[in-house]
Length: 120
Image (cartoon, rainbow, N blue to C red; front, side):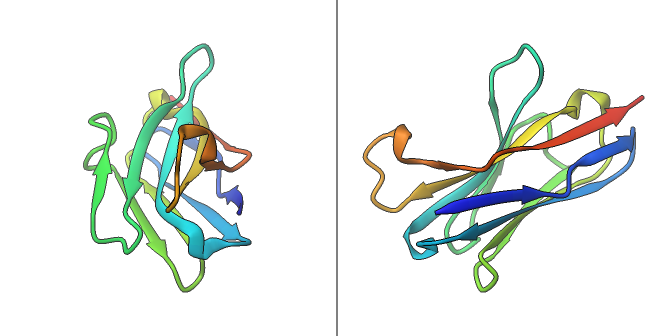
């Protein structure tokens, strides 16, 4: 499975961006998907996750009410709509896909990341 993120960029505080994650390859093997982010000098953190059918989502407290995760399985694409962006949202955002037959964390698939920069 290959994951490619797009949609990052520079935006002013209060603005919006929509990230996309396009999956290719053995996409039938994907279960839960999610977005993570890593700011300079900080550990990678979970932003949002979505189940395979999109029936359930979960968000980090810091983005609840501002970000929305979704997926279109027909297009093998996951999205992250980010509204009311804050400077503290600045980070590299990574797409993650968990395989149905995951044995350990090292089995997960990751994208290359896309930079989101929010100016004050």
